[in-house]
Length: 294
Image 1 (cartoon, rainbow, N blue to C red):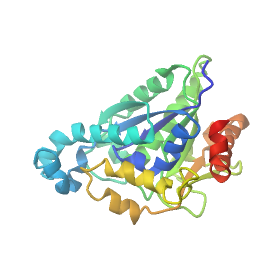
Image 2: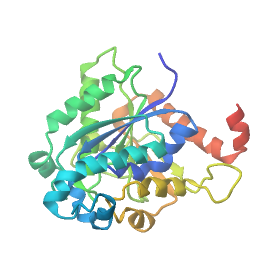
Image 3: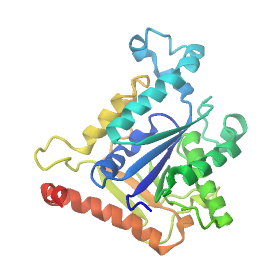
Image 4: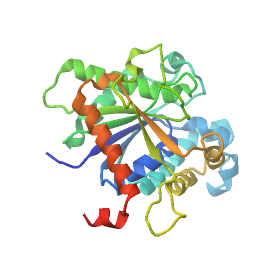
């Protein structure tokens, strides 16, 4: 069995990975973890943001809905692959669910856009076989929130439901990953999502872990921080013209926030997450050259 940390990231749209770009980059390049990624939708709904990039894509009228829905699934898939190269993502799983419209109501998402059972079955299969028999140690999902895009919350809830089903099956030969939720917003208190108990945050403390985007990538310069990595990843999503501006304003933050879910149950799982974040703090707060030589 491999001793290399293996992480499965689950997002709703191509470009959602940029919300957690600092942590993902540090996992792959500082801890040398394997990171794979599931993207649930095909991203066709991004046509509303595609006007500025049309000249880059053979002057296709991507901002025209019919044209955008036809070509954006292919274009955005390639953009995600390019962003993933920067972040060190090894393998991608595209579930190609419909991206029809923005709606905060997850029931509408399941009723009108996504095949809920298909997503759960595919996610279960990815957990079982995506990293061969070694499985995944951690699954990073989008934190369910009443403030969020319904696709974001739906992706997180389906991932949590998949974990619950695997727990109930009690399969001895399947590694069930420990689940943490990344917040797209800056939160000053423990998040709650009353409509679904699976999204409950654990009472074990600390139940919030933070990754500091202002950490330097190396100890040789004060310029190169993880903020730069975030912008690099955003810049690959050119069909989503306002992403960089949005990242620098509405989603501007020094810390990425990750919450530990009650569904994980076992104390040893909590220690795994705590150890990873402590390791990242240590790597970035003393002589990096020494760490890399060890």
